[in-house]
Length: 191
Image (tube, rainbow, N blue to C red; front, side):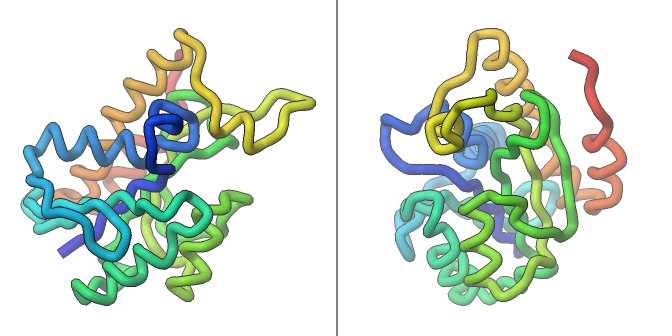
């Protein structure tokens, strides 16, 4: 069984912001694979189903981005998920252009506060992640203001396509393995 986590912030004011790429991708997976909502557990919305032939739990922590690690650790412990082999985390990345994806098997938080908390709570950096590019913050902007902001219309089109591709990448990870997904989705796309 896999635990697939989308990072984001709960609440209407955060919908469609740069920081909610994980939530948006989970929503795409729920819709595409008709994953039924199972309720709220450990301060997270979750659902259970099958994707790519694997049993999955889809999860959106409701604790706000900077405290995502606690709910993820509790859910992983409860369902006996090994983070190093059965966890996939989806989140925004300012080091990638809008619409670009990057799949990694491990790594640092790279300045992402949600990932910092997740790594601290899980005690490992060795877990799969799917990063969705949101673009670098402009000079003079506050990082929090930037990631909690919304996309321009042209960026939104790229990002909506990337959310669909991120959902497809998760399915490929589950059905064909991380290496196949990395070969397919880590290539820079021309926009």
